Image (cartoon, rainbow, N blue to C red):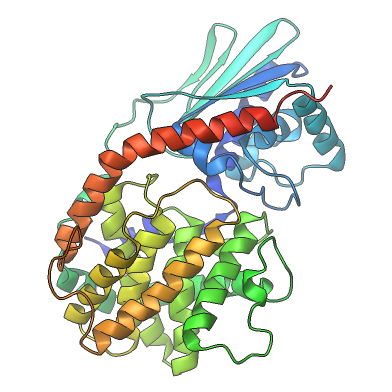
Length: 427
């Protein structure tokens, strides 16, 4: 595996939650194709996009949240030429129009079965005409665009694989392989990794000066919190800012900003306390991203399992071992111990309460790393917990693609019922 290719694909800046961004982009494209005022619209989503975008804050738009609002804003005033930044610069007048459209029940939402995990179709109507845009496989990949029955754009076929080539490759590696990849990062890689640390700590620091919905970053008022609590509060606070719609970019991991927060912030907080060198920090962050990617290769990108806790938290646990001068074997012990702690944590979509899960994962990552460094942690297979990285990955694979799929369907149905009740016409 080429380390630069891994970092280029898996570790990059992200602005806001990508699911409502994809919905807004599809709506903006459809409205532009319609070339008439939008009178009403329908949103059809994959289960995963519906769930992740249902309640999350929209970046730079205080107190606005969710797929339905994102679609209305994208259709009425978004700039689809800006891609996933389609809602950047939305005016108060557009917000008022979008709210009016929602209040009169002119935006409906549904879940479409048997589609890729990332899948959005927005259909807009106006002046007796219809247009629709479909996004599939990636959040910014336009698959088709129609006005009435005329196809305006059709993308080449996409490979419908559960994991991409990079994930097929990384899931074959051992913890020793991942450890060596972390050692191999060069000066250019180090700059990217340290920039991710800086970027995500800006968001964490923002949470210490303002209540963004949960108040997670405000807990250490006297400045005497333990290192474990500092790690928890910083990670939870950063997630809270992001999920509430804070206007900050974050460095992602495995395609997710919250994954990036969990994978990065605990290690940076610990490195500051332990006075580690930038090189130690960079290698530890690299290992964190690699372990996160390894586990995501087993679970998939959008899953019933809370990846920002389970996969990224496991990565942080491995990185925290490396930061303290541990070994690859101790990193593996920390990972499996961590997963034993949070195995079964469900994803119920992106929103401020994700910060609670991120905070729990951050604190548990420090605990699992500390246990491993001192010879403790999981020493033998127990229940569904395994002592090897590979077997842990296989267990998470079966969780995500087996029983938890049924739970995911049931959970999404409950959430859709709540969403429909919340968006009943008020006029």
